[in-house]
Structures are given as structure tokens and as C-alpha cells.
Length: 219
Image (cartoon, rainbow, N blue to C red; front, top):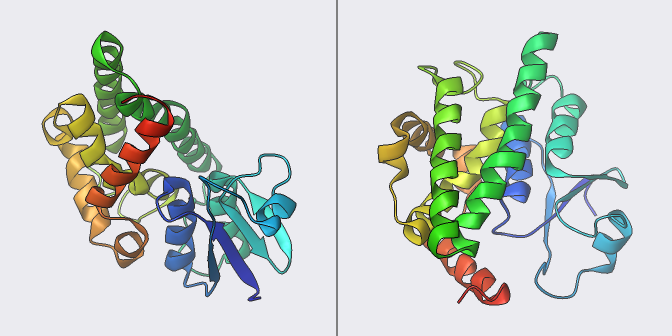
């Protein structure tokens, strides 16, 4: 086993965050694919006995769980390369706030776009567009959420770029029309090698969404 091991699932945006952060830092690691839709490995159950889910980063035999915590750990464990969180305490707090917003609001509402139908889905779409506009307001005219440098909030949100197509197709709208700055930011992120190598093709994500819809009895 290498000094750094990542227990992950190929389509997970949360695992992809960890992959992006490790790539930005230039950390060599061993990737271990987990069957999250089936039997979980003994190593995963041992490493994350509380939630029993990916991603888990194992560094020198010690497990770290929850994607945003893992990204912060990666930033602190390898501080000499490509800082992800700003040095200023207030700016760090703001970055953590917006990364949490991605989890609590963006991801939660985005999942409802493919889990729901009819009026409930229409309401979720309206809410999601409002969330996009809030993100657009925070992004403003900056290259990345942290400014000129690719940082913590970008790492948190970038994996969902490959989910945009599924959101749009399931709910019938255009992210580029609703939030052109966010769409342009997504394209810039995809130009980074760390992001492009971590993310799955939108068509593959749409396929896994179809599997999840059957699992949840949506179709």
C-alpha cells in the first residue's frame, strides 16, 4: 500500500474533489475503486465505520473522512504546494462558507432535479436557478471563486460541472442561459488538467443518473 490511498467511486463528485486536490498538490497516491451500489470493502468499513461511505483518504495508515475535510487536510498536509485555502482568516472563513453552500444547497437541490417530477421538479428547478444566481454573484467577474488562483470553492464545485448536462436534461433548462458566468467558469475549470482528469464525461454521468433513478423508483 502506498503512503496515500483514496477509497472512491468513479462518478462521485465528492471523491473527485479529493482527486482534484491531490492532483493540484502533485501528490502520488493509490486509487481504490469502491462498489458503492453493492458490497463495500472491509477496508472502507474499517476506515469509515461511522458513515460507511466514500471518499476516504488514508495517509500513512490513518483515515480521513468527508470530502471537504479531506480537501482541507490535503491542503494542510502538503502546505508547500498550490495552496487551496487563502492565508487570510476572513477569506478562509468565506471559502468554507461557500464550499458548505455547495453541499447544503447546490448538491441537495441538484439531486432533486432528477429525483422529482411535475410540479415538485419545477419548484426545484426554480430554486436551483436561484442558487446558481447566488453563486454567480459570489463569482462576479473573477476568474475563479478565490480570484486569479484556483482554490477551495472551485475544488468543491468543479466536479458538478459534469453533472450540468444531467440537471439540464432532466429538468429542461439551460445553465448557460440561467447563469452564464457559472457556465464560463465551468469551462475554465475543465481546461485545468487536474479537473479534466478527475471528472467523468457528462454522458457517463447521465447513465449513472438513470441507474440511480431506477434505484429510487423515479422511473
